[in-house]
Amino acid sequence: MGKDVEEHHGEFTAKDYTDPPPAPLIDPDELGKWSFYRALIAEFIATLLFLYVTVLTVIGHKSSTDPDKVSPDNANCGGVGILGIAWAFGGMIFILVYCTAGISGGHINPAVTFGLFLARKVSLVRALLYMVAQCLGAICGVGLVKGFQKGHYTRYGGGANMLAGGYSKGTGLGAEIIGTFVLVYTVFAATDPKRNARDSHVPVLAPLPIGFAVFMVHLATIPITGTGINPARSFGAAVIYNKEKAWDDQWIFWVGPFLGAAIAAAYHQYVLRAAAIKALGSFRSNPHV
Image 1 (cartoon, rainbow, N blue to C red):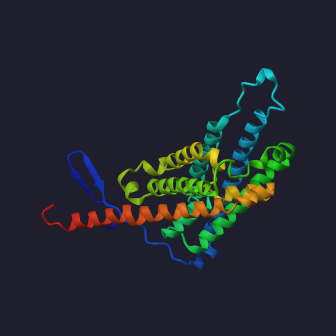
Image 2: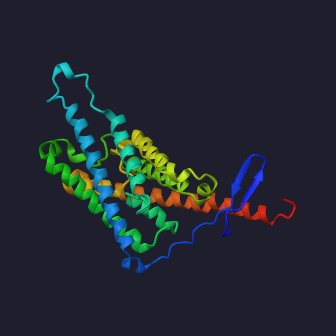
Image 3: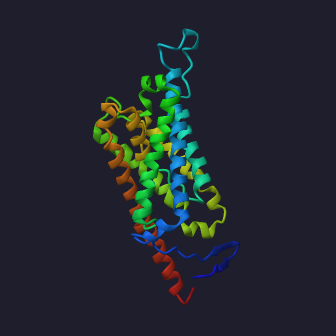
């Protein structure tokens, strides 16, 4: 198992692989390593940039479609629209995961970190401090938006996630659970060590499906909750905007993503991967194959 073994079946080549050992539950030794603090800085800066660009996109869209500002000649201009906002979120995740994956793993989302912790991919110490760095980065990113465009920021809702009118809290919670499930499931699939061993190009392409997952979920759920699926994104916007409505619905953007991440981790680790491991063990123990 320690070596790559190739088995040729016609034109197909399958490489043996070894799953990395589970991360320790508590690993205080990480606190003495520069690589750990470098990863925290990467998560902080990545989340800051993520919130800065995406919240500016949301505010810019609302500004360009404000009926009190748009002249009759430009009435048909709809800004970037939901499609453009979804591209901003998905595109930024693609860029930032690509840039930071080799340093911190490119989580940029407490729900992703939580799911990877449940799967024992990261230690509790790393998971908790990643979440702190992500939330602080989100607050600073939205703070920059408000600092540069305070008038627009306040007038157009600060990019805060809020449950849209006409939807129940249960609907909003369900949207966040399913949306985060899609994202975290994609993260697990894109970084699966079995796939990495079989397809050497997968690590290079991993940020692409993750970014597309964010894009697709935003298309579906922007009309419901504005799309959270990232507690740091929702928390950072709520802290800087600091209006009652943003805080009233804040629990949805923590409970939903954490539940969705937990379900995705359980599904991938205990259903999909467990079945794959059993099948592989049965294949190797069969002397007639």
